[in-house]
Length: 157
Image 1 (cartoon, rainbow, N blue to C red):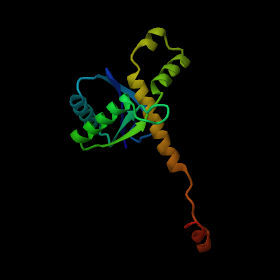
Image 2: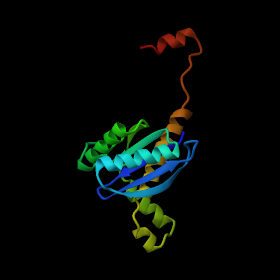
Image 3: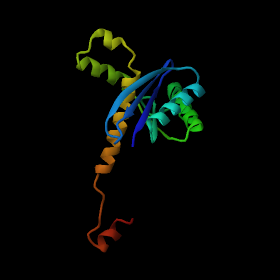
Image 4: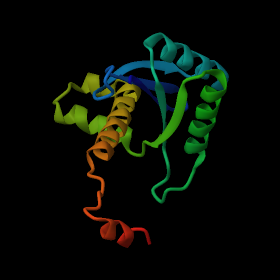
């Protein structure tokens, strides 16, 4: 399933998309913020045109996990996207994604000019890859299967 990720900011909204198998994220586009409703409509239209089955909205929780002003804006955008479209929408902690995108560009020895460009779509790709990797990790975890009925009874506590 193809997944679209939204990294909302005050001025710009970064978007990233996965491959059809939902394994690899790539930066897609940066939208200029207009209004919550207009942004939601544009995101839903893009998601529908790409055949996306899920939209992940990055929420920048504070260092102690609480909801600050930026997180509230992201949650309101997620609600607006849900109201406009029929594609499933979830939220995902995106704390530190912009800094990680900047670090990645430095590690890749990108030029200073490239590092000064907006990173919103790259940050969205980092958020999306984190989300996709977490889903893969969950699928890969072994599940407990009792060898005998006695083992099953022990684990029903």
